[in-house]
Amino acid sequence: MKNRNGYRQISLSINRRMVRASASVTRAKNTIHCLAEIDITEPRRVIKEHFEKTGEKLSFTAYIVVCLAAVIRDFPTLNSFIKRRKLIILDDVTISVLIEREIGGEKVPEPVGISNAQLKTYRQIHHEIRSAQSLQSKNLGSLSGSTWFRFIPDFLLKTFVRIADKNLVMAKRYGKVAVTAAGMFSKEAVWFIPHGSATVLITIGSISNKVIEVKGEYVSREHLCVTASFDHDIVDGAPASRFMNRFTETVKNGHLLVTETS
Image (cartoon, rainbow, N blue to C red; front, side, top):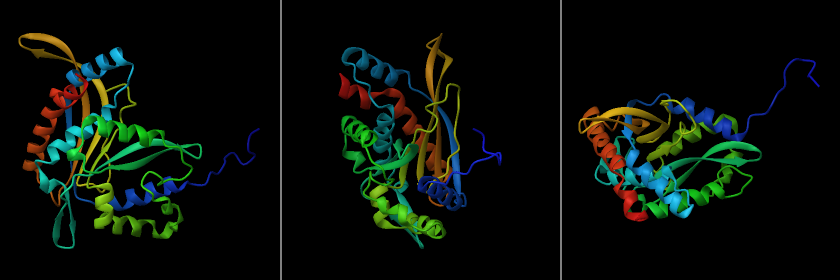
């Protein structure tokens, strides 16, 4: 039966209100973006062969995280944030991974912080992400024990986001490096331009096939659309480019995956 007013009203969830507040604050950040295509034929082959042998579906997001952690370890100034007039460089690499969960009948993104990621294997990160995805809860923030988020009044949400962005405790819990797989559900070549408070944010887009020349022959290879976003207050173009060269090669060669599935 149709509503006689021609519309219906649905109250915004705490998740949507928090996203609005975060977007309003982070859109003012001085962010530079890099759009890239990474040949992932080799790691995808390893994942497919492992599934055919064992029936286990490995997390591709976990693979991106372990590669990112390995590269960030060699670029320590990117694992940082600015507080007042000082650059705070974190010793441990914590990577915030945005995963989709169902809470109260609504599919919502929620961050889980992978602490000490530079010391963890692919398997350890894979299991942390899978455990977070399978956790049953009715409240946002249950992954990090921060369900109190929902009690913050709407008029204070932006203030909370601003304070959290410069807070050392929050930086240690969620990190200043992040990964989101927003575009993995797309069927065509798609890049997303994200917003966020991370100093380095890797946004995974879709996977597409491209014909390229390899050793004089034309072959079809799988390529991942990736957007890398950097806080320009901390990262200039040259170091961002060097970082991307290393990150692209690390993802492409599949070594961090092969060593744990062979």
